[in-house]
Image (cartoon, rainbow, N blue to C red; front, side, top):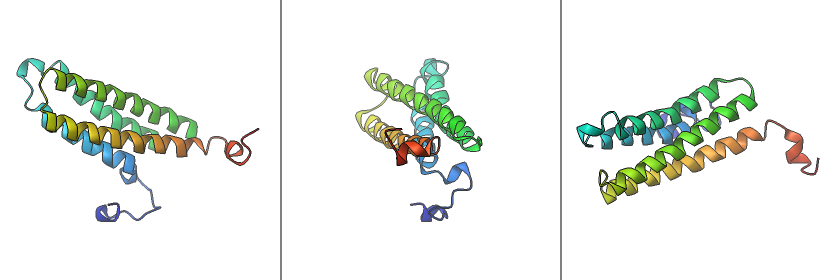
Length: 140
């Protein structure tokens, strides 16, 4: 997949090279596409909330990537994780009020879960740079 995008494994130069960002970006596009068919009365309600939460995921990943210290990076990645949890809640609401079909719900929630796992991996890996001694000597 990375090679399909012209990205060499191990060569992360831009936030767009992060798989967590790429997969979360797919989620953003899915949210925008599926919310187009929501009732107009929801334009400034659930639609706006879902779109803002989705955009916040990739925006915080990008901002975290741009920070120099790993402590700051992790802080922004955690903000992205919070937005991802928020969008999962909103996806459930949209399903429960019949704005999303079962098939649409399933595809979106699978993408959200996939993005969440990748983001958690990014957070975990970034945290290893905060205090390398904890990894080498966990009893310290």
